[in-house]
Image 1 (cartoon, one colour):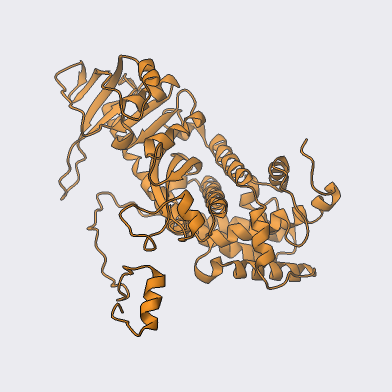
Image 2: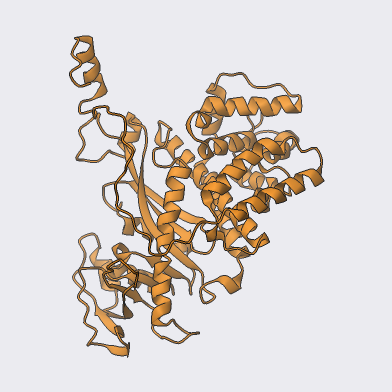
Length: 477
């Protein structure tokens, strides 16, 4: 049992009350996956329960509100203002306007605890998902990577150096992330975080650190970047099936192997030369050959020319129960586009394109609190979908965020449990009405119409530009 830094009675007072300011009460959608006892248990485990004005729960609530907000609403000053307003409604002494105490309290939220809470939410959503709606009764996971930037501070630069093509003082520290996301719920199961460049920082290397989350029988869907001999062997060893797009460097000949149908065959892949990053010991453990299935497919869309793509899978049999037909495999790989949409939801909606914190430690906390908030929104969307017979991925993530944020302000005005429950059910109903349009065959050129501000790009460090301004030289403007 982890020793708490102060008495249990002091922790209990205000903790449940504060958490319910964020979760509302047990009738709120967030409480279905993250109740006060669960939060207390996780933070106790990491010896991170603290009291005072800024309790663990209050800071968790305020920090999550920051990452879900935009502009000035995402500032620490705005967070302190909301906490003060909450205390005023309770008739309690409000904290001072200075943000220093709140910022110091945020540091006391352990990264490990935030990550664990995020895992628990994703796991709970996956366990409650209707088995009948799974792909052939299997859990399907999507994998892809993305990058984000952070403030240009010395400590951030040391941990996450900027792109090597940028001059010193002109770029931003950049981190690479690989996400493992549930196809069914859209929740982030886990993420691997590392520098943009360096040894073992590529997407494949980061993905290998997430393989322990996969169970025998699961299916991983990913693009051609992950379709390597070593990666497929790693997954097969765990009993995990793959559905990858064939890497463009590998030659395909459908005249070879065991023919299952037109452009559908089972073929043996031979082990190639040892990759430069792999040790000889690990290379020798790889089998000399593996048996895989390759399927060639072309999506027919009116008015659009499509190049054929090759899907590689370990689901060898085209039987309905034991394996998958050619069309089913093509459809399964087509679900991969969902991970692009999920990353788009994570980066702009959760403000993860460019984080605000100025040290790597706080960047990690901001990152994981954002993922926790994302998973909670996804869980709320799944509950709304279940109540109103819809698919979770057919509902708008952005609209769900807006309704949840609006609800936090209104919840405190509900005086009885019946009023609160009725309000929450109304919010869930409204979320279920925000259906994303089905637009098959849609494609757009990657251009923008709206012009940006006509400022010159910064081509010298800011300190040098200040010196030029002091000399009266403003030719760069």
